[in-house]
Image (tube, rainbow, N blue to C red; front, top):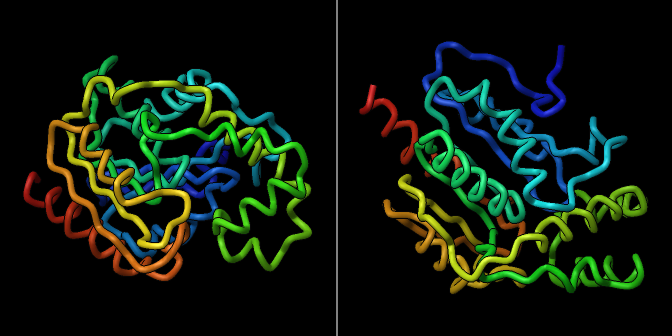
Length: 251
């Protein structure tokens, strides 16, 4: 039976680590669908939040505490082996706070936290997105800042179905107010960003340094918010070097 949280998951006992991947606002697990073939050293587990793709009939979360508790319950049975997190945009915020929660409650920490095109929650304000009065205004804003993947630009007939989830995701991002990172993580943080991202500045990406007691590094790529679409191979190579090699050394 397919787990609705992890619709593309296939167990691979030969791997030593699991990589949980969290989507951007409005996005789904299919964004990471092909990563398993490209990262054969890991069990890649793409996380599917309610309100999209195979869970389109479910209400999306709008309060971060509710989302984090549900994610904790879903992930805990899969944390019997070393794990890492990858979060894109909104997924970065979720994965960071989930990592904090697991560290605080269970003394469980990822081997490494990968964050892409993501603003730290203590340096973000998403309210102006979900406060847009009309769908047309929200679409115009998203298009103007490159806040959508290229594939969606060619299928704008999907916007009416996706906008309620996008709005809910922005509300989710805005539901947490924090002046500082809180208790830093003990694991390393690696951040990927686009040098022409209208949503996330380099200074904001650098602020993730405050979220860890461990190693921090920032990798910048040419492109906007979805720079990853043009640099996926390089990013996978970087993840392999940082995570796979480190895992082999520990083993």
